[in-house]
Image (cartoon, rainbow, N blue to C red; front, side, top):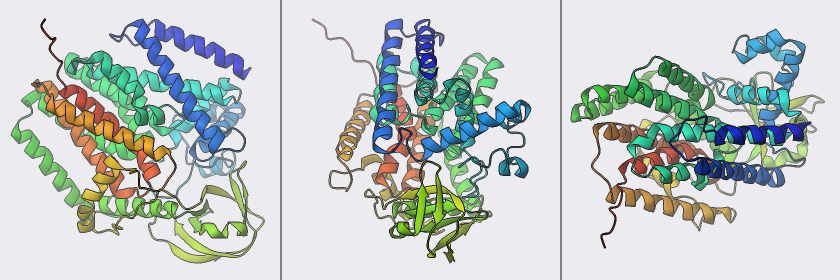
Length: 491
C-alpha cells in the first residue's frame, strides 16, 4: 500500500504543479522541470543517508528520530483521537502523564537538554505524524511529501522576490539547483520545513506591504510561528528585523533608519548581556559552542531522568548500543560528565552497570572536520575577537587542506563559485528602488547575523556546510536583487 500511495501522490503533486496552483509567473514547462530537479535532490539526499549512515535503510540521527517519534504520535492518535488532536495543537504537549505513558517511546519529543524556550523538534515530528497516517511506514512517501513541501516553499520565495529582480527565470532555477541550499532543503530535515516557513512568511509580508489585505497577515503569523517552532534561532533573527522593513516602507531607507537599526542592535546586545543565562545572548552562544565542541570531540551522549550524560567515545565497549531502538545500556562502570537539564556546566560522575536502557541523544566518533575555535566561555570580548574566524569558517571552509572526505572539494568549489557570483552581482549592480534597497538591507543584515551565529557556535565544518544554507538563501536573494540585466548587443 505504501508504494501505491507513493505513485498516487507523485501523480497528484505533479498535476497540481502542472496546473500552477501557486499562481506563479512561471511556465508549466519550467515548473515541471523544477519539480524534477527538486525530486532529484530529495532522492540523492535520502540515498546518501540511507546507504552511508544507516543499517536498515532508515538513516541514523535526526531523520530516524523524527520518523520514530512521529510514528509513536500517530499510534497514540489511533487510540485517542482527541488526545492526538490536542498534542497536534500544542495542548498537553508537556503533560507528565502523557510523556511517561503514550509518548514514553519517543526520543526527542521531550529532550529537555539545553533548556531552550521552544522545543524545535516538535513541528517536524507533527508533520511526519500526519504523513504517517497514509504512508504505511514507507519512507519514500515521506521523502516525496517533503520534496513537495520544499518545492512549495521555493515557489513562494520566488513569488515574493521575483518582482525585485531582472532575472526571474534564473532566480527560480538558482533556488532549486544551488547545491548546498537545494541538498539540505530537500530531505526530511528542519531545513526543508524552513524553506516552506520562510516562503510563507516573506510571501505574506511582501503581499501585505503591496496590497494591505488582512488575509496576508494570516500568512505572516503562520510563517512566523513555523520559523520559531522549527529553527528558533533563525526565527529570532528573521522575524524582528522585518520591523525595519515595515518602517522603511513608510519612511524610505535613509540614514536615520540604518542608524536606528544599528543602535537597536547594539543596545539589544548590551542589554542581553545583563539578563539571566536563559536569555543572555553570550551565555546562550557559549553553551551552544560548548555542546558542539563536545560533539566534535566525539562521545556517547544519552539522557537519564534529570540530566544530559556524556562519555568518551573510547569507552564505547562499556556500553551496549541498540541503534534500532536508539537505546543504550551500561555494561561496565564508567566515568563521564553530566549536565542537569537547563544548565550549562558539566560535572564529573560515574555511572554504574545497569539493565536499564537509556534514550540515546548521539553516539558519534570524533569528528574529522573539527576546527580549532577559541572558546567563548561567557566573554563578550572573546565573542568579538572571534568575528573574523567565524566569517572565514562559514564563507570559505572547507578548504582543500582541511581533513574530511572528498565531499570537501565539492563544497570548496561551490564556495568559490558562490563568492564569485556575489562579487559579480555587486560589480554589475543596478540602481535600486526604495523597496529593493529595503529588502536588500533586510536580507544582508539577516545573513550577516546568521553567519556570525553559525561561525561563533559551530567548530565542525561538516555541520557548518549544513547550517549555512539559510544564510546562503538570503545571499542568493540579495545578489539577484542587485544584479542588473545585460543590455542586448547591437549589430
